[in-house]
Length: 273
Image 1 (cartoon, rainbow, N blue to C red):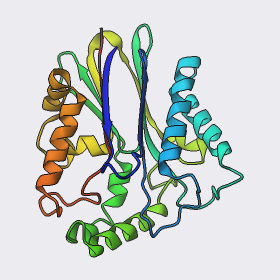
Image 2 (cartoon, rainbow, N blue to C red; image 1 turned 180 degrees about the horizontal axis):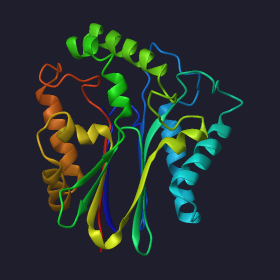
Image 3 (tube, helix red, strand yellow; image 1 turned 90 degrees about the horizontal axis):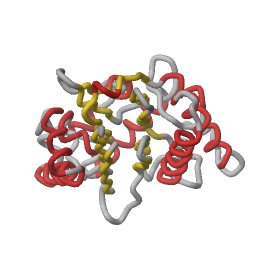
Image 4 (cartoon, helix red, strand yellow; image 1 turned 120 degrees about the vertical axis):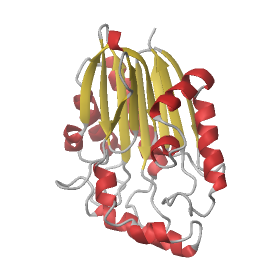
């Protein structure tokens, strides 16, 4: 694959909780689940530490092992949990967590894994783009979003509504009937969406955190086909620039209600060669 990638924090004064890493034949993206300041997490390291540590562990596993992506994710979650088991409360419902997308090229196939709401888009021959996203978090969250969506973005009311939303979501994290993310339990890996596509059917692949995919799936300012064209012609930086332009045009969330007015945004694009 010929790879290009870009990542940008929501603001320059805070850590980027996304992770993106790649080799010529593998890409890993994690989007850490940020915790509002008024909610405890039980972890002294923070979300950025978790997503970056797990992400680098997964990338190493993908390059050093021929195990399934599910097995590599399970091993990575277990290894990362062991790094802060004795200094953090891993039983806390707010322990750091992250979405995961893994993509690996073999001689004849592209193997993929998606856990939670980051997005994998495959530009396949003679068909519409194949869009893969785990929608369980969005479906669960739809029960609790109304007060947050009704509040004016950036106000104390909005921040309080966001905090209540995230607190309510904790009860549904990594339980049957809820949604699944990478956190401390390696069994979450078994809940990931996985698949394999013949390499000769794929032109390119895009991996987007939800802060980058919002241009398409929340703002509806581009189709998936148009997003692939932007990435191919102008690169991931241009896709993120358009996201920021849209966010700045709606600073109070009145046009596009959302929990985070600005979000960490990460995009990777791999052309099959």
